[in-house]
View 1 (spheres, rainbow, N blue to C red):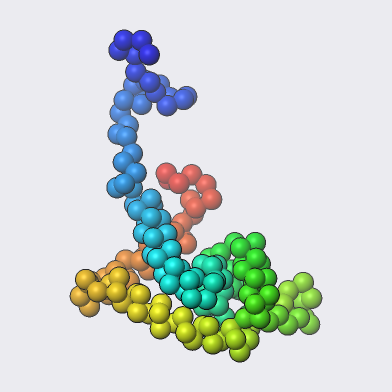
View 2 (cartoon, rainbow, N blue to C red):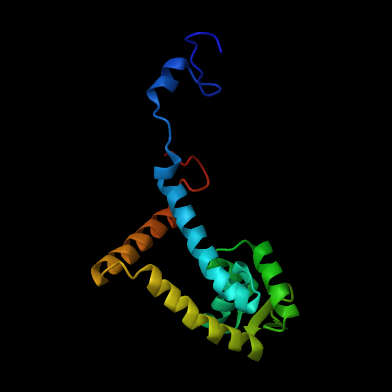
Length: 173
């Protein structure tokens, strides 16, 4: 660089770039939520992963089937907010381990109904107490009011993101 020459983001006028504060990633809410979610998921996954050899997507499929019983892979994806490819791979892995069974949907042969097998239910019923205890441990420093407030805030943020007209467009609107 030459002397006092300032760099600007590509395609912006120097005066516009000077008016923009740098983004501090460590204080940017979407980044912080992502880090928190990843750390929580991976910490819990170490517990059930070591014991049962299942991945995070596989656990989410088990948990969803444990909650709803018999549903389609599409519904598992919607509920767990996983991409259909991720759900498909997790279901295939769980089928190989005989934790999940697939039954054809006679009304629509393109999809199948999924359910836990007896071994799948056993794993599910062993992981649920571990997952609940883990959730209690990470919230141990919060009192009942703070926990309720946290739940409310998460619900409100999810509703905002789910209902956002700008989701697929310009995020800055």
